[in-house]
Image (cartoon, rainbow, N blue to C red; front, top):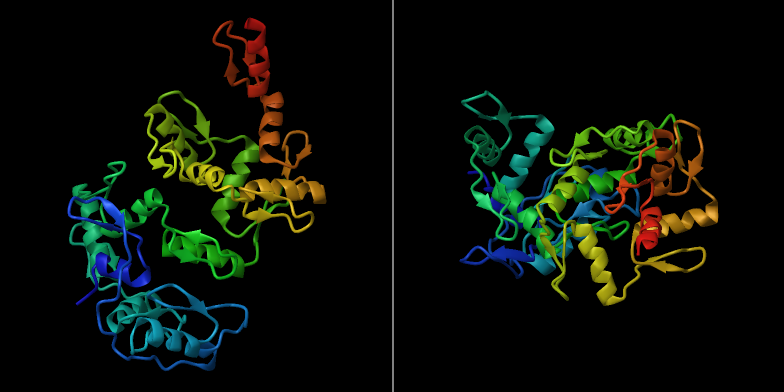
Length: 362
């Protein structure tokens, strides 16, 4: 047969989190426990050496380390993971620890989908994908997270989700060293490095590598917020922002600090908080050497050097260096005042104005 979701997740990463008997995920390392078949695809010259010497296109299927030559990958695999060779796809250079995984992967290129759902007729390239799809018809989500009780139709999706709680990011970009919780997000990120920014905003000329990012960006210019909270009617540009907002209503803070037990609604907020404990400021300005604990703060700082103001108001064309400044400015046009004094019900466009007003009552 075909590999299960459990086996496949073990082949592409070294998980730091694995379930114990009671279902709690603990820190450990998965060691290869199978013997690897020495099966090497015949490949062209382009498949053996990356066209760009700086591009590391050959990735080890066991530890995700990348190399710019197929021969170096094979040597690495033999020395660190056993005496056999990885299996290489001659079409895209992707490597696998077993021949059967390559056979399954080749269906991506041939668009072969031999597994069909008997209920709706949808077809799949892998049997485990069909099995996961069948859960959708039965609304069955058997894989439950013990941290936040969220449920999933596939074990692989649960494994990726648990990495959020464990702060486990085993997939590292070989170009910028940024890390990711899943291979799919890592691969999308690599695409950003290799692709020109083809989607341009007609309002402010800002460019994007993905069309959906441009669509989200246009919501900002149009002040369009299609995702509304059913509890308080607050609206958001992105669905992810609405999901995070709903955690505030439910008092759900699934991301805990390992130093002080403080909890957060977003993993990004937890990770930023961790830098306060470690005193790290990993993002440094190349112009003045000033350091920051968040890449977003570095990007804001860089605009002070370039006088770049990419956020433009669609109403009056005034430009701003930061998105938050544009959001506040747009409220002047819409007369939106979201900050209310609980004592006298006076409304304000900005939170600092409300804070200053409260001193009058005190």
